[in-house]
Image (cartoon, rainbow, N blue to C red):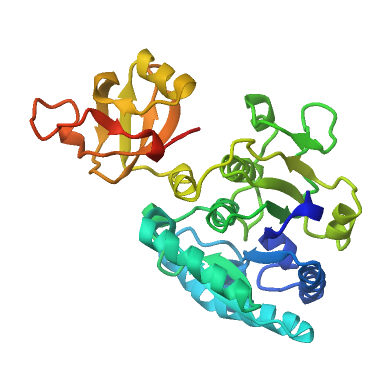
Length: 354
């Protein structure tokens, strides 16, 4: 839990940071900065993922409803981002802390060299005492490179920086069993169909996502070995409660299997370049015997991938069982070609079971 964590990521939703369209809740932000400073004093490194840029831009541009067209959304983000980061800096000033703005697109974490650059930048910022504040680069994000919501972004960031815990804080106290007890579910070991049925979307004009996106993010973080807490960003004592051993929000246990750095990059690729469909024998070899994927086990390929691209490996029933880096271009797999000298399509060292 938090008492043993060395590095955490805190995602703060628009509903936590604002008190209406275009209105920052500066008192709450100041309280959050107090909490971050206290955590740092305990030796815990903190990375923030901050929403609200689009909402602030909407207010400044006098828009009452969230725009539906991409260009206007990008314009709102461009206006709101500078307001957002300036307010964060002002609230950290009393603690003598410097903030660092990091704006990302999905492509920044999809490409291996850019993924590494993000990791190295965050490491250097933390080493120099800065507080990294991450947001999606909405101004340049097109549909195919968008994260879609900051819940997903926060989970990917937590994986990239090898965080011990991810806090997804919004205006709800946790995952609520809406069809059962009506209470917050305290612990989730595995996100099952029953757990997913408890989720519901957001209705706020300035927000994207909802509990559906939070559960999706929790899956990504769990897969990377990172614990997750979904809780209320309006509770000024949340971190103190956790440090005192109290249970707050909904805790999602991390995967017990430790994943190496380069495999984390493979695991978090939720948008792969294609699919490799395999037979039952290959499924058994991958899941139960830790083997590489051989050409003999491939039944077909889909998409348009090249050697070095991340692909998903699918069982005969269509379930995605793993991600892996293909050693070959798609057209060479299963082809009658002397170019395919080795029969290993995806080596086990470049394969992550999901």
